[in-house]
Image (cartoon, rainbow, N blue to C red):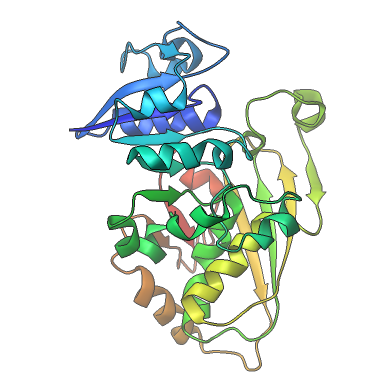
Length: 299
């Protein structure tokens, strides 16, 4: 049995993490923390977990949590993990960071995409980008995992096979659409129902921070540096992401070669599904079909 602790478990990410871990037969949740909900039962904050656990939120500091678990999950805001991880790393606990703080290997990229200097650059190389379809063997042997960004995951899963197969040449353009839960649970004017409902709103036309992850991982699989442009849209749904990627190619590849590239990388992957139907309503990937699941549909 693997004992785990979650730092910052009251948000959307922490809640989904709890749901998944509570269903794992080999996991024991030993500690969950929240500054706002100390002493409250987890299911009071995450009602969908009622009947699954009676654990309560605590105010334990990360080092205390680390002392009693095998794996610690950091579900904290961007810019927090990188400040507390150096001390945690000294304890020997396995660390899974849910924030963006260790996704990029190059410290200078944090200044470019996030606007701040990374306080623990020596740890960046130790973290493995947590996309098992690309890094499974590395993930098996690491104590440091950086969970990928949401839209970055969708874009990378769809583009990596083509990049690896050498089917992409020029710049890549990613059109991303995301539901309101992607903004997190903290209220703001932009996520207020009367402002958010019914929108198809461009909120980051250029320079979205997930672009750095996409460029990094496409280079990892292909050895080639791609220039990626990305536009992010807030759309009228709560959960789900849809990315439509456009790539410049010198010659049009045969459809069979495209699907061969996808099969070569994903045929044995349990959570990647190919959408290939020629008729019917769902001929292409639709976020509605994947909501609440671990599936990524590619078409």
